[in-house]
Image (tube, rainbow, N blue to C red; front, side, top):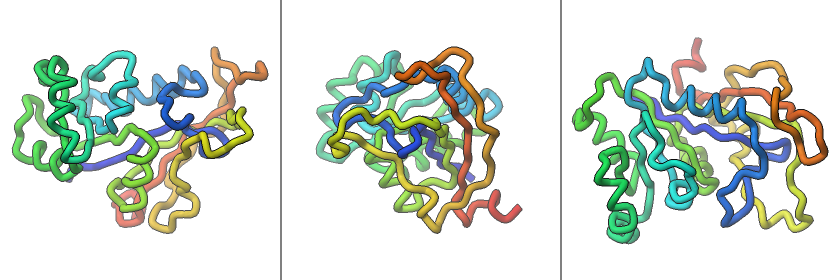
Length: 210
């Protein structure tokens, strides 16, 4: 079975970032390392990452290595994106889709050179996360929680937020680490960033019946 998961980092208020700005409001090396380790896990051999257009444009290095990258878009955007990212598409580590079923079908037909592909990760942005969770498209969610409020603007509508998993009765928490302090990264007020790693699963997922 192909497992579809979502992975993100949020602050105390479920904040992901600012609208129209894909730059993170914080830097947490431990979260970057966790993201890389989970999404490019060598034991899974061939994980896929799915993201919206703006998230892909914001990547400092694209496509992400050791993962097959997918841009999720509306059908009428596809042709323009194929032109915009023609160079990346030529490298065979990027594909464009208009639904998650395209990704699943691509894997099922074994149209990739690796074997045992079984994990797909949704990696942003906020609208893709909210759509995927509210429609139960993902079976598991990996959340890095930061115990700090990063919103500096009094107009909260300028920010984008993660789905509220605690209020979603379709998902349940399955694991959480203890709170830890970053070895290298600080909050804007100078304290070491306090964080933890949490996992949630769709109640129909096998993990929830163990």
